[in-house]
Image (cartoon, rainbow, N blue to C red; front, side, top):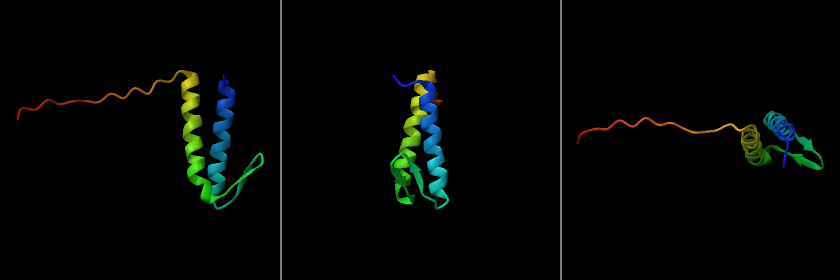
Length: 72
């Protein structure tokens, strides 16, 4: 089980990577070196860790839609 703090740390690391790569820089995370070409992977990881933080924290993402009946 991943702790909320670990998930938040991972999310922050990926957000920092995205910011560095977006400004044309490289970013190194452990032994991996990320470049602009890796931006899709970075954004996928940001989404994953954001969802993981919400899951651990118990945040629900229920969407409410309004339906308007019409006579046809």
